[in-house]
Length: 178
Image (tube, rainbow, N blue to C red; front, side, top):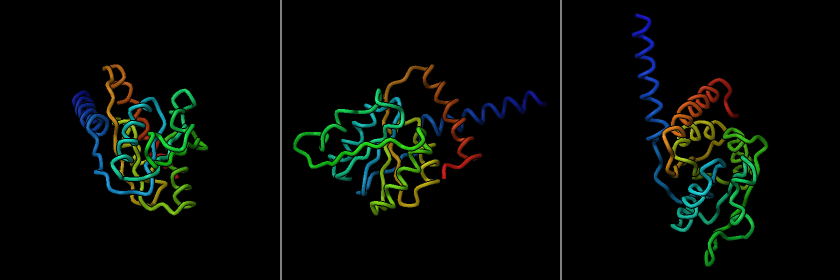
């Protein structure tokens, strides 16, 4: 009986994790005040997605988090006022007080209050979309759209993300970001 319960619990957790990590609900973009790029290991793909959204006219402003250090920071975008020659897209980089999704959520909320932003697109790695929505939504009260950027990952990296994102969800429920 206990073994059956554990098996069912494991299968249920795997199903939920697969849905939230591998196939998250992503929002359709609409015009917003800013496109925010979350820091992390998928920075190149995430930045490319944000630039594509800006070029498509969803915002003329990109805010890039340097939450995980300068080795993942897209310095070429932060070093000049526009990411692509011939555009008017403004790029700004920031380092949140805490180097975590929660810290990024706090920073987004503070920027929004300071600058009067009401609508934000957050771009992150696809496996991080669901947790980013929860944690940033705990801090930011405006319209929040979350869009993922997919990048190839081997099975070991997917397994790591299953565990890491699940732990992050538990942490978000126990100790809300804001």
